[in-house]
Length: 239
View (cartoon, rainbow, N blue to C red):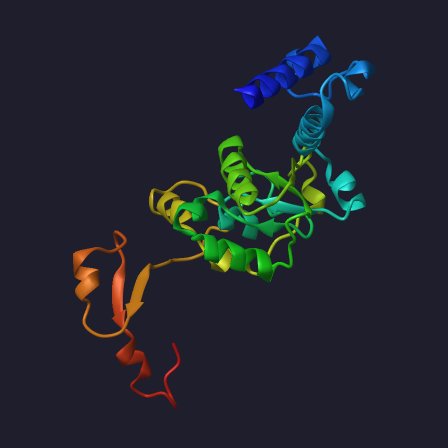
């Protein structure tokens, strides 16, 4: 009971010390009464809470790419990998990703175990105390931010000027050779697409053996080729 009363007193004391600026400006850094730092007002518990909220405010502060690079931070693209690779999200939209950005697509997360995420983090030499800035739509950014926080990351920001300067964006070489489902669907529907084939085109499902799975389900209009036929004459046959 005594501990509960002490916690209540600390909470009330802290609330009195935080100006209306903190409460009304959506987690902007507030103005604090200097007397709040005295030992007789709240003690160590209050000061720890103050440091926590200061840290939270810093995490929420958006950064430009220049600011991120000055602090040796890393940008993380939360969009589907096709857009990271180089496909534009709209027909004439920006193409590629921010310089040196990593790709952690929000669409991967429900299939990504904790061990797999930790392996991704290790692969890219990221530390839990590293500064990272996310970009993508709000839903994707929130999803990735939540998973990274669970993984122990404490310095997560938003890249405020992401995709705003097309000239600095980077694309993977020959990204157009790896198409994605929506692009193929739009092509089949006769819509305008980026990197449209110049001549005739065909969708082919290649697999080993009889087309059992192909007969159950396949991309509309796709043909099937048994790779046994391709490999029958390994010395003289080219796919």
